[in-house]
Amino acid sequence: MTYRTLLAILDTPKDARQVIDFAAALANRSGAHVIGAHAEAMAMVPMVAPMEIPDPATVQALQDMAHHETETVEKIFRDMATREGLSHEWRSFVTSSGINSASLIESARSADLVIAAQGEGGLLSETRSELESFLFESGRPVLLIPYILKEPRPIRRVLIAWNGSREAARATFDALPFLKEAEEVEIFSVDPPETPAQSAAMAGAEIAAALARHGIKVTVTCQEKTGLSPAAAIENRLSDSSIDLLVMGAYGNKRWWEVLFGGVTRTILDSMTALTLLSR
Image (cartoon, rainbow, N blue to C red; front, side, top):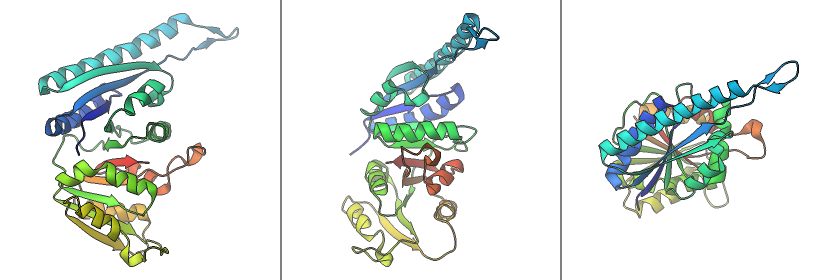
């Protein structure tokens, strides 16, 4: 199993270079086809008081600026993809809904992996809202690149944040191509609960055995009663173990937009230090 179709979400020119670098590094290893996608913002209509008449000149100027950014991002993508010798194509959509564009979501559903950037300001509330909806609607795993990671590097050490949930299981198996190439894979649980099927001491053992059957070198770590929140425990583990990739489920409820991500996911995404693969 490998990733054969990558969808690179290219927002700003600065983010585009970072995302294309990572997409190219992955595509060159797996022979993947890369789709560059950009959501061009639809200009909102300013109203002129007191008659509240739309200002066509302002609207056109805003749309021209957005289109110029689209052209800049497209040129960056095509130039870098050609230089890297990638199989590639370009798609852009004019939309008022950002990455939640129906056309962009439809494109994602035919991709093995979506690649996007955290962005310089981190995942702000509006961006997080878009990402949550995108994950929910597309059904595809998203590889997020932290702002601090400026260039691709080998993924040797992987940490799987494991709590036995559907989302965690989905993320784990979505990450199989990375896990198979890694030198070390750690299943990491924090204060796991006792269940009818498994004791807390055995948390992660069954998923570790399943991964071992794929030829993956796996270790299992369980932290209990440390007094740390799960998010803090994961962040400490990322730092202490020099983790290259974090694999975790994205938790939240699409119906309740005020709690778009569960607390652990929200904290991790706001202070990303490693590549993070999210599924739900």
